[in-house]
Image (cartoon, rainbow, N blue to C red):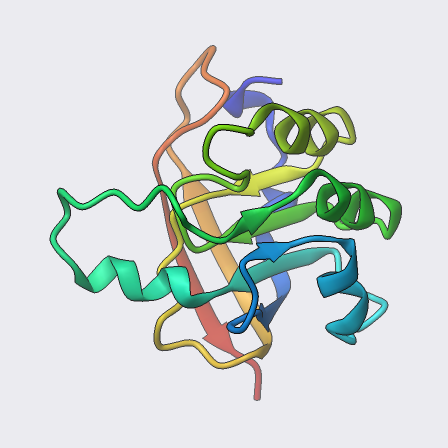
Length: 149
């Protein structure tokens, strides 16, 4: 689906930030051990990737932490509808097709390029507003989190 047909309900509302700082890949085992709340439908994943945003913008890290195919399947099996990550791709460098295919075929909305460096794990209100680019499968967006009281 193209960005202009995407329901903003998927990008606005309650979201859970989970931190995965001690792993190299977010797979089904990592997600199982994360003890995520069962009601999570919008999940934002914070890793050590967020530290990259304070570096020179010309630096690209091929070894960024990403979601594996088994992690993508885990998310879709549990009804996650929106997943956000703190680097330029949700999928591993050089092996992006399986993760993207699993998520997109299940209708999961992907938000990439989040800077979660100053964000603690927990519940927030997410406001993510992509540009309405007709015919595009993605768009730049401004994402804001407000901590729940």
